[in-house]
Image (cartoon, rainbow, N blue to C red; front, side):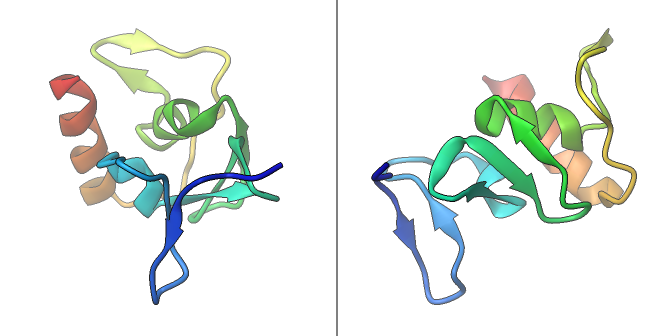
Length: 90
């Protein structure tokens, strides 16, 4: 499967025309953007970058618990804050 996007000199993947900060903390597995591996704990989220962000914000957002999302216990609080801020702006 071919996935459009770019890899910078750091090897980080970011889809074309995406400003989603979630891509700073996860990478697609085998070129599949629907399966994203967490850079902090190695968990693979099946549901794309949105599901990875839910995993990283400790499975809660706007008072809603994502009961079917595994929490990341290794993500730093500053990353949680950045991602929550981005998610609230959407």
